[in-house]
Image (cartoon, rainbow, N blue to C red):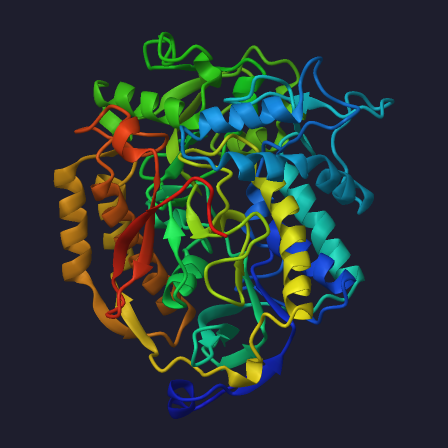
Length: 551
């Protein structure tokens, strides 16, 4: 499907044309789970991923999977208590029915994954009981993990191996550009580009976006280089509704390196769950008196506390704080990934505190969907970080994301099969290729700088106005003929949407912190904000969303 084409060909029609029942955009936990289940249901599936199949965001997840297994949990812990912790972390914006539905599906989803070959850490070599950790915001030890701190890598390994064994077709190094739509607006496939810019089209009655988040919107992030918001931008251009986009979770602890750009090594929250504490340069506790859970407070609380602490530090926000894990026995065995990252910069975490700082980590909002992935556009589904199911609200509870991908991924496949059987989806032959092959694009380095300065942890009206003005004035029309152009167009559109939503939300809630409106406003703002594209292609705020999600 690749080869050399002329500039004229690249500007006009696809070089190749394929068919499927379901196109899955992304090869992380949600995408591969959906693809495997869809294949079991007899659907012709094609997975499209812009990197190698194993290079999704899933493999970077360290902490684990938050789940209450029937035969392995703390005394008194229940799925209901897991739901309560999730609702508290979500700061009033979770959809309670969605939370309970997704978490109820967790034990069965994890059992399926283990039956498929996933190996989670036992309490001991001779035990069949799984080891469980506790992370920020959790009231019990319910986070199962693999390889110490390499849970995402094990989940990805398992799913990639299953996909290979079952011969699930995967189109690697191809980026999804735009939806193919019928004259009445249903999605009927996607256009793609290979790494050389060769265009193609996959026609299908169902498209699942499982493309991850947009951590590359910021200068420092825990996300890989491919997390550029492509799926979110594609959904907006296809007419879908987005919500809660202003809530970007910053992980409190990535390994600090001066002037860091791009993906920074994560220091999993489970390190604090094992007893590590956050200290400033003088040795004083960062979290003392901030929250009843101290160092195990929810991520938004810890990240904001670190940011406030550094504002008064001599070096300012560009300096680190320190995570003292020297009291954890067997650190190298329990956290081999963190240990290796520390040793790579000449640090011994067994003897020395680890310098850390917050970095962009997880998008709590996204394409508005039901708990089985249906969006507001017929034929378009979303799952994982690109979706807003209502599970996360204003701040994600640690280690809920892998669980969401496993549960919703399977449900999407079943929803697509049901919608196909009921004749609810469009005939792909009616799909028309997008008429526009250009988009507004800002220079990436400038965009990352302005978003990191004005739209990160602490925001205010003046800074958001500056960010919006810079984005408006610095964009130019660019043809979407390369991976880089598609990514930069996506980052630009997502940045504009985020800034608009953050400016309008005049309160602080979860991981949206307004320094000029520091209090939570339950009277006016206990609701999500809907975003769609205007006819001119600009993100506009629509009516608010109820906490019951979409029908």
